Amino acid sequence: MTPTELVGLVRRLVGEVKRLRAENEKVSAALVGLRVENQTLKDEIARLKQLPPRPPMKPSGMERATDRPEGGAERDEDGASKRRRGPGVSKLSVDRTETLSVAAPAGSRHKGFEDIMVQDLVLKAETTRYRRERWETPDGERLIAPLPAGIVGGCGPHLHRLVLMLHFQGQMTCERMVSLLTGLGLMISKRQVVRLVTAKLDSFRSEDEAVLRAGLAGAPFITVDDTGARHAGKGCFTTHIGSDRFAAFRTGCGKSRLAFLGRLLGGGARYVINAAAIAYMRGADLPRDVIDKLAGHASLAFGTHEQWMEHLRALGIADLRATPDPVRATSEAALWGAIEAEGLLGHAVIVSDDAGQFRLGDHALCWVHAERLVHKLVPANDKQSNAVEVARRMIWWFYRRLKEYKRAPSPQQASLLRGQFDRIFKRRTGYAMLDRLLKRLLGRKDELLRVLERPEIPLNTNASENDIRAFVTKRKISGGTVSEKGRQARDVMLGLARTCIKLKIPFFDYLGDRLAIPGPPVPHLATLLTPPPT
Image (cartoon, rainbow, N blue to C red; front, side, top):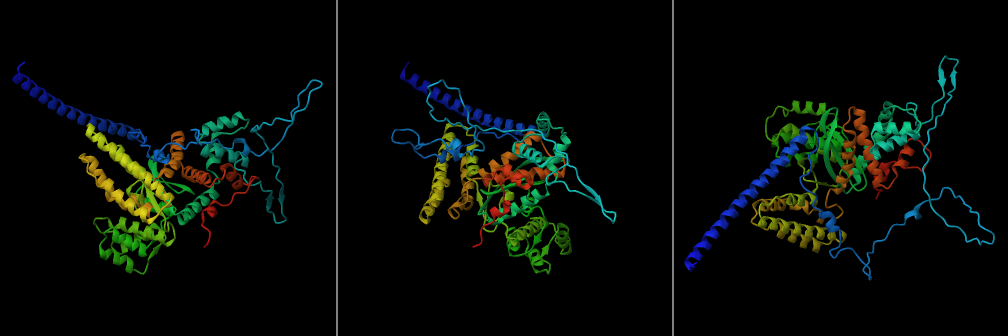
């Protein structure tokens, strides 16, 4: 071929490559759209089947990856890992010692003993007949000897404890418990098992309420999350409220900010107009005349929702039509005022996944959820993929630095980290969606860097994720609840079980003490959460 023909061929090939590249980008963009549409359809099918949608991607792994040293696991001089096995059987307490003999031939020498620790469990059915004395007084009144504490519907406290353990901590259904217990020799029906799960739990409910109040009042931070729940055949939501010392679950028909504030108050409707409520209303851009009407009225505290709504109607606020909704905004403000008046939260920071209902008071964002927004981007070409990968690596690197800061905080390091945050999130990569996301996260700088002011708070909501997983497992195994007693029993007992785990109290011992079974005493859980007087 002549040079002129070669130049023409190269030009045609270059044009063909450009055309194929353009078509490839169009196909890639269409593929991304189809993936999104496919996931949307899957989520819609799950919604119609009343199932939670499946996450569209795997976890990012940022938390675990940044837990490891940058050089890998620590090793000794020989290159072996410094990790060692735990103490094992050395923690066991010996209840009984039995000596075993062996027939030795004549002339043998005794060489002492070889010990082996064996753990065992004995389960057997036991039926007790209580003969209760009956008397009739001269006045005609009849007396009968009381039953021992802990007996519920013909079932003793040990059986009650076992049923509560298996159902709430062992995640076993009532049908399987009936099968297990009848196999052990008991004559028990599913109705009796359900009664054991839901009956005579008033003391547990009051303790769970006290745990929530003590935890909110004394904790430096709380992590919050919510998940779907089924109750009485309807779709509801369960909110988890907890810290490193306690956990509480509350289920209701909504997950709005009004619902969240009511659950922080323990489910009661108490409304107070004070400085905190007025500041909330100003932050919500309510009209000044509405704020003045509420602040200048003689009545500033209301014990029920009906009293509060009557007060709003009397002031003419309930009839206003404006944005934001005056009834909703003033109700949120009054609930926030009640929380402030009762000393709940105090100086606690609320750490959340950025759901709108949780953005209250001193608020901090979960870094794992923030990084997940970058992780879930679907780039259309190599350039965009590289931009996403670089952004994720920089965020992981910065997250590791925040962990190091928590261990040794200092003002100089905090100033350095703020500058590094700006350099990471002010970058422009050319990938429009990633740039918008980085700009959005830059606008939440104060909430993402709250840890620089409060090093004691966590960087993520993993504690809530772990706690709420117990609820999700219970939902998968048992489905929803039907009665109000069942709903309360599920929320209360799951919360107390998780609180016992965090306080390193065996749930078995806790139930035994509350059901008057002889054993190690367990103090009221709320007293363990109340900070000592200064």
